[in-house]
Length: 400
Picture (cartoon, helix red, strand yellow):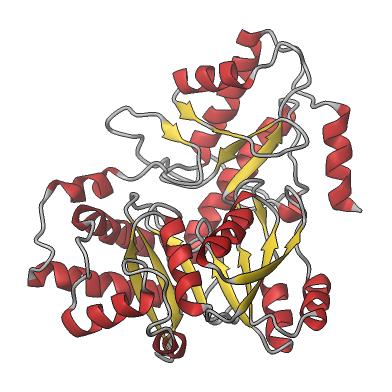
């Protein structure tokens, strides 16, 4: 992994002023105090000041996406990220369309489940818990089924922590005359996924991920031609992206009560994102977090699910130790007592847990995370953090 800067060259970020534990999760995540503070004021959703806030939010997100030619627009949608994913699917996939869903974790499976609810025809390439979908197999599926109109992929599948080969997939999709939709929920804002980086029709993310805002809305960034074509297509009144887009362009307002405090917090988070240096700098901090934490955890005896090539800077999956004294629930509580909330694993074959790298924290915090993990193992009486042999056998599949 790349070398990281030393403690002497990077000043620590402020620790949480309210004393809450760090959220080592893929969102909600630890936010800056300024973001929290921005929520102390009330706003009228119909008022001109708040309409201006919505317009500024949309403009800044388009700037992050790199919409230099004015071909895209940004449509914020109330609710969690999954609301925006469903809104994208229901608005941009025609009712007689067919979707190829690329699955390698829980969120790809959720997309397939959503399409079932929507009554949209779909097929899948299911790679299991974490294997990446690759261009040639996507091309083969498209060649075998001319009825497929769209492909959807999860940019960073946080159930394993894998960063999927988005550009490779995009090139294959458009070479075969289809359209790509991207769920970049946990990557947008820190991992390159701009309009200049690769081709897609729409991409979705949410406020409480790499921009480091708080939960309450997601957003759809889509080609204006796709937005125009989506009129009357949605299955849902409240999740109709075209209707939301049309209303915002005509009135500046959200169609239904917006999360006003969350929008105010997000604008502050956008300011901090911009001041930090945008996508490149935010991604670099998260990558340093990952590199320091992974190196320390490996030194302590833990093993990652993924090889370095596939490790995202968002969240990392570790195999649980084989030592019979290890119990995740106890490990979780001990880590929480030390100021860190980690994430349970989602692998089906072997036991695992996850540690997030995103949020208002830096490599100094990650060194403390590693020390907390070491101490917790000692307190549990775990002699070795090494995983069972079946875990290493499972990992060897990725190298094949």
